[in-house]
Amino acid sequence: MNYKRLNTITAFLSMINSLFYLLAPVFSLVLMSRSTNPVGLLNTRMAGACALGITVITWQSRNITDRQFQNMVCAGNLAMFLALVAVEIHGIWSGAFNWVGYLFVSADSLLALGYARLYLKTRGNRL
Image 1 (spheres, rainbow, N blue to C red):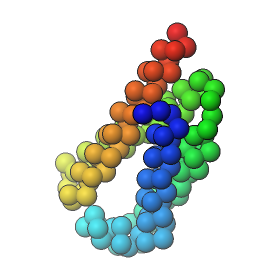
Image 2 (cartoon, rainbow, N blue to C red):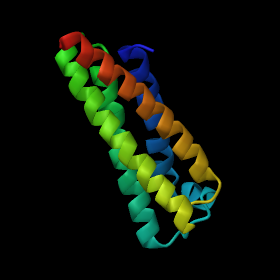
Image 3 (cartoon, one colour):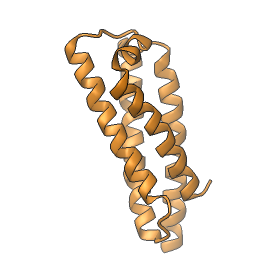
């Protein structure tokens, strides 16, 4: 998979995530069997705002051809997706996530692998 395609997929998935979290936080929390108290709604909307930022960054950077810039974006997204996977696994183990957590872990793991591959590939071309 190339850089543009991976960033397009990431932007699309992040946009869907951000729209659900920002516009339908109650639905998102109920789907994950979580409480819809004000703190939960606030945290969900904050996560949606972050996902919207990822959407804009990955969409705007998808056409960049400079390898060094691509490498920076890949490294940042790799770090983010690895952190997300760690948090999601902890959420599953602690009971904070229901079966939906496995979908998040799967999707974020695949995106992390994609960015790891591109990071190593662009880094190898530079060495």
